[in-house]
Length: 390
Image (cartoon, rainbow, N blue to C red; front, top):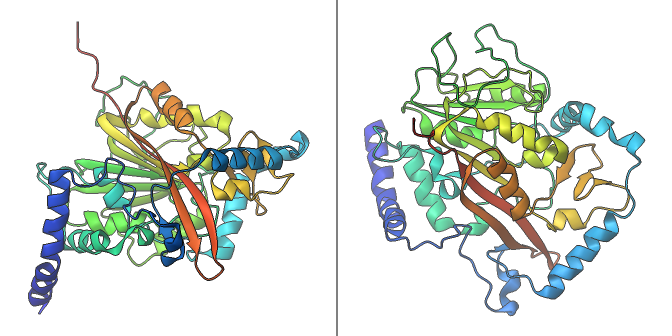
């Protein structure tokens, strides 16, 4: 019965899979793979929930700049700002206590925008039926259904606070960027040849699409968050499988906090709506440290808020902490990036740009007849090969 069901699913999905592969092999998809629903007739704006690759006029850009300037003109006093950094874990823990795992949608779009989450087909790995079915469904669903970070909720995944000190952790001091991996102790996922780390995993909206895809492969996923409540929700999820995933509490801002794997052991680091939660002065050190855990040739996959996103412009006076950095009413924080800032952060860590895109969309509330300009950053950076010996 199971074989018959699997065969019928594969038979149904095959035409869509072949269509996806053909598009990919012929490079028929746009260079910026951020959807293909283009608004060509303004009268059609309320026909869909989302429009892709929206071009801003100079008037749009100037109006957004003025609004951001206005809502940052009155800033929180410095004496009140410290708690949003020192107590960040508590604010996010309270957020997850209230919302549990009901606030964000699972990121079904991950493998279309970030195919690097799976090793290339030439590497002794195969995608399973779950992934094939997902690709087929996503390929025909339209871009307005693929982005789990849209809608009117401005906050997404947190960074992490608190340290995990399990006895099997690979302990290290400030790692040497040129250090090679040595098998000095057991660590979870040691058996895998392809390893992914998601930082700021929240309650698992990226974790479980990945976990359900990498089962029956030699891949392994690490995921961390500084909210103990979020990690508890991940581990309590029915799809959590410690044979392919290791969730742990960790603060990526604490340099002394250990990871459960050695340097240069990761193929992919996924950072989706995470760095924006960190104070801008901490970001460079965080990326520098994370990059030491990438293998040469490994990649960082980044998606986050862009400058003048609707959620930035709707902040009221008194919520701004510093330039383009705000605190929300629940105490969580958010920064809004430019392409140049993203490039500087990753290139200073010694990483090479593969992709650095500004994703501008028009989000539509068809019921209220309201349109909102959304701006996200999507980037990919690779760790270059080591220098050749003299």
